[in-house]
Image (tube, rainbow over the protein chains, first blue to last red):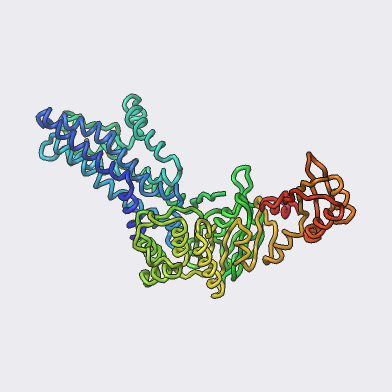
Length: 242
Length: 303
């Protein structure tokens, strides 16, 4: 990891107009959580419904997409990444520096709001917030790493990421049993379900896979995506004008 | 002193050949890479800078491969053609970041020196997004110079500069070359290349069309056959007189004007007014038919 790469990445991520979305979406979740608390009298079941569906299913992948594609995609598109790559800095350090910034932003703007949302909407001794916080952390790391890799691999990272996050995970995953098993969200929910024990069933926290399987698959996806991204950055072809 | 050696370098994208079997050596001094837009200049510079793998052939810097070798950037400074930089930071912050990425011992001093060299110290506190195109070119140049490299690869560095900035950069390139550096820059403007380059490499349609100092390139360009279109009071008589006087190699009468081809440009321009006067023909319009740079390049390729 290179500190200069990280500094420039933070400026790039927060300096663009779309960084406003990084604040707006979490605020929306907090607002909905407050509304849910008021409407359901702070019931953990209602809280789990909001967190499991909207926060984990829509907000988290969207935030990770915004962050993951935001830390490197624009620089590759406009060619300014050349100033980082034309340096005697290993490409691995460039990618890991950017990934570290993306993961920190994911925790700050996505994982913490998910846990906070669960706590606000209705919880019992912060059990739900802890469980969903853990699931959001695991899923967030995998999503963000995957989307960073996608931005290095293709110029259509945002579209592919959207299709995956919204279509595959939310729609197909809801109807097709086999698809549910191949889902970052399901893998990350498994340890949350374990953590809640007997309460999980009543609160509707349910994963399609075993915890050990989920954790292994998350690790494989995360490490694999990072490795692919580093490999690709080493041979990144910068578009020539003619 | 550093040397870049290209040996049988080609680059294709699918079925399109961007650079076709180029062999050249770029040594200390200023080398101008001249060619029309789309000739493959940027592709060639990308390969020299290690940002593109040659499809065939090798690019070496002082004997070492440049592809997948970030260590070359200790010796190479690069000005990319793309205008985008980190717009949200100031010129100073950007230069400092570049110096730190190079791992320089005193990044502050290096950044200051580079900005001074391109005369951009004064506006350095403003965000890059507020700079003009020419100022951005100066900052790009400063980032290429910040680590005091032996080799400079500059893709269209004069693009967007006003005449004062242009002269300033030409002076700077001469100074850098006098210090023993290897400077390569691309341009599609002959006059620009002629004014500063010790050696000119002409690239047309991906091929290495000509090589030499500016006198040789100039001669190649002026000694080629020239075409003129002439309108006169009596085209037929003028055509006969020009051929009889030996001032033209060929004449064609077409649609109310006269097309003349000559291989001796100097002789033709002197003979034309005399021949017209002697044969009592009034010249209404004389214009070169093919003076565009593209046609000059096309001739060099067809040679």
